[in-house]
Length: 123
View 1 (cartoon, rainbow, N blue to C red):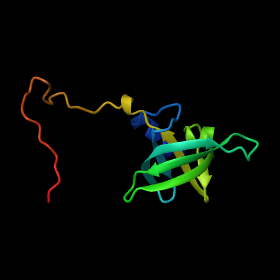
View 2: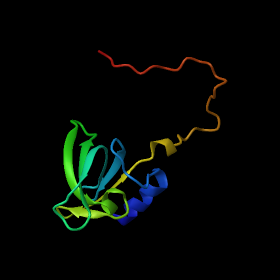
View 3: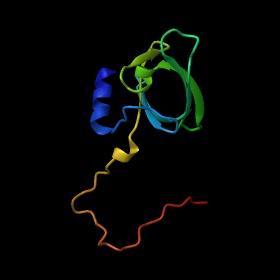
View 4: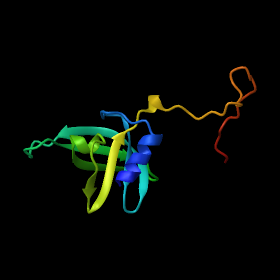
């Protein structure tokens, strides 16, 4: 899992904090998978002595699913990996403002005024 996280950090811009509404990237070791989720809510778990939080997530899967995980701050901010049901996991908010698309040097720029194709659903 540590190697996977190291590789993800090379290609994904992550945030140091997590807020309601953030998109998080979740990595699961077994089966090896990556998925995105939106943070719906989080609240402190006062029943525990240490700092634990109930994190409500909307998994961006088909179909969408809602889950609630109880994690420590270091776990849901990407500072450390953790296990759930014996499987290693990693979760951290993605910095969508820091994403810069790879554009080839010879790609048309603003000077090219051709109409851009529109995406539409076919019936």
